[in-house]
Length: 158
Image (cartoon, rainbow, N blue to C red; front, side, top):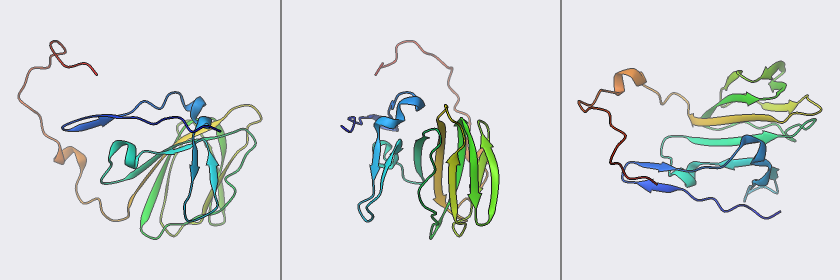
């Protein structure tokens, strides 16, 4: 399979990338350098967007497939946001249903795995990985308004 060319555009305070539809994520394959693992339908965004506080991946698990291994983390919790399909998620010895709109957080120590229980629809999800215990303040208190009128005219278009 030919790996699609991943490109992003950047400005002085942003990076943007368009990976296409979740249903086309199967064109991406993640290969771990330290393990002989190839995962079709997975793309990490850290390098593409120059992320500095989290790792994010977009994922597509085909109908009837399971992640072929359990995994844990040393330092990072994971947040799974399911945007399409249905399946089952397993943490340690607990199994529960997942579908569009389900959000799951797993501690680093939790052994996790999932499977797509559909015969026809992909299971599409976003995974956000961040250091457990590192969030110290509410986002709403970190943000602040800028005293500037909103305008969409006379702006650079990428």
